[in-house]
Length: 573
Image (tube, rainbow, N blue to C red):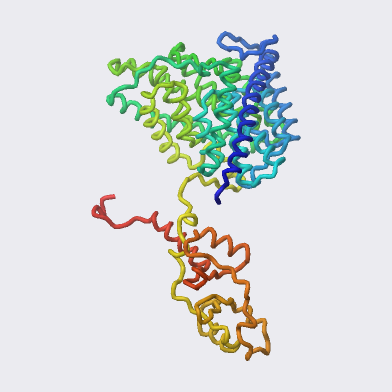
């Protein structure tokens, strides 16, 4: 349905508020994570995220992580939606609960994430911030009188504000919201998204500075000769993304088979990733500093391999347990380390390509994240915004798209949708034209309409119903105007009335549709009035009739577009 300019302006005003709220939420959550991390792991007071490059944890890191898991489990008793990285729950709210998220989630999600990450959880803060922004948008949409569709836009605008405020990447935030949360692309949705993301990115600049979150390495992607390498990189990153997603699903299944209550899973997960952290401290926490080292090429080949493996295992064990945390930063670190390894090997094997490990790591980040989440376009735009260099677009596109193709072939569900599928919810992620919006009534209506006159008797009408296959007939006068409509049920409810003319028994309040109306209007009128036949009227005269079967036939035509047709090269493919 069309949205008025006034409603769009109202959504933009609310989106501006969400942009400010998302920026504030990002600042508060990052500071809270930094404080808890310093207190729990380094035993000091600090408001900036510490580096674990020289952190040597003792055995105390394990009980600290377990305690964090216990607190998260207790919070999950109060607000179950906080489990995991939260985006699947936001998608479920959009698809099944009219974009309603409880007020508890807006408090419990950031608090639980801060506790989980602050006690060593191998997560990024961006996922919880995105979910928190979405929850704030949903709450505003529940307080104010808006439609469920508008509430969805507010939820997505809040989520986009959270991402833009964290990374300073407003374009990627808009695209991510469209790919994962909105399930539509329209002016009424796009404009508020841009408003909230732009303002949140401005808040990011004011609070965190204008520099990108990660320092981008010197890079040179020019030349067609390098594209085959990035194509191969994309294929390998697709395999890695499939391993990441399938491994996570397998470990989640392992947790479900444990002979203990689900309540204790986050505690077990805390013990598990705490042990990994004792062996590889840089696998703990948000890992933003580790991502920076990977991009700068400061890590040797062995260190890259150890970091990638430790982060992946710690993240699997933590996220699968149902604790609270994000996916973006871990996937970036895992993908970047993998790319750094391949870039180092390629630079040694083919020095003539002039590839730097950090540059390859940057592309691999996009490929792994896009393939694992199926937010392909968002990941390309995200890494492009981080570099600010248009030359990176071509290798990003090649590697990320190929990685997504490989991952989709090996694993039908993404990290974002597998949990929903287990709950019986299949997420449709294809953006396609709505045939009911683009097909007009005149394209499917029956033009040669069988009608009855107002003077036809009930007895004659019954014979017509017995001999014909129609469920209703329009009553048309001598000038071709619709005077009523009579259905089979109308006549069956009239005993001993054979001689009555139909004008006395037909329904006079006739619901009609115009030939230039879209089918969605016809369907809405059928559903509202619980009817199956709509006379099509132009200038007061009957020109056709539209039935539910006609509408379904239009849908069938759209499905036929997916069928193979014979061509000149039949037998080749």
